[in-house]
Image 1 (cartoon, helix red, strand yellow):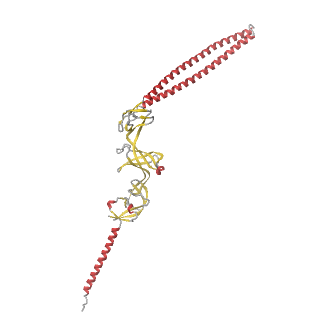
Image 2 (tube, helix red, strand yellow; image 1 turned 180 degrees about the vertical axis):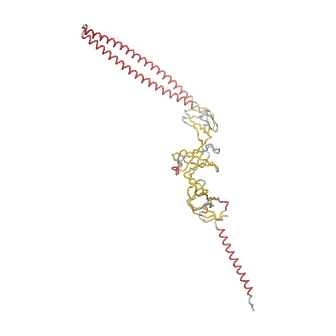
Image 3 (cartoon, rainbow, N blue to C red; image 1 turned 90 degrees about the vertical axis):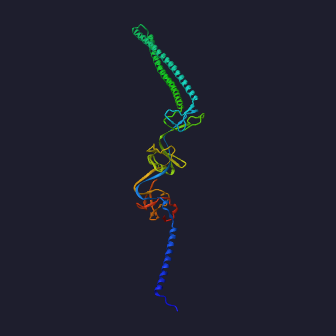
Length: 414
């Protein structure tokens, strides 16, 4: 016959069953929570970069690619057509003003100079002979005028005598009129000779001027030929470094061909290119920052903007504040940031990968999670970006590339 279980035994059995059920439920809850936590997207803290939201200034910039070039570079071109006899300087050689760069065979140009010099001497001799002939002609005309003046005086004296004798009745009226006519005729001839002398003087002046102009043209051609010969000595016009020179001895160069380049490597500037989309926003005088390496920035200004667009890119030139910076090197590739705007005392955060996409959202660190937060950006610079709305001063923002979590609202930080 079964006996009734004692109440205390039943209570212990019930308590044991409840405890086991509780433990089982807790284990299931823990397992589910652990599974959900394991399934939630996560990232290691050391794999991301964060920055604090702070208050400061932000510069809006346009980024361009630049190349460091010498601030002053002389291009040496051949003034004549000649053959290279000897190369005196090679690329990399330091030269002073007046040093020979190349030796050219200028025999043909020298022959032209000597021919022009002879023509000029011949022309000057012809001009001297012309001047003598004209002086002789003018002197002869002046002598005729003096002789005609004497003849005119004689005719006037005869006319006066005949007039007096005619009044006294000693000569006839016909003789008196003939003497007066001879005096008038001599006056007319004297005036004609005077006019002829003036015309001869003008003609002589015109001939001498034309001859002098011809001689002047020849003299200028001779001087230019001499100057070209001096330039053909191929000497450096200033001190510097030879960055390029013609290497082939015996090569023939035409007039105007570049045969050497001399650069002053004590000062530099930057030639930058940018997409033609931004060309209209560039202007001379705009401030610029040039990044030489990860830790060096040099200030400057836009000196000029090339109006031509080539292959979808615009080119502009930058004058540096420190043109002789120790890290500047010829042909060094640099990043150029043109400052188009500036705002002070605004909320900002390190640029990082922010502002690269159209979706204006960032991840903000909240405890052990990075939570997606919508924001509104303002000015964007190369180092910092303005945050108009969405986060607060002191918030820690993930500035690394989080494009792998673009559809996730929260990321666990491990």
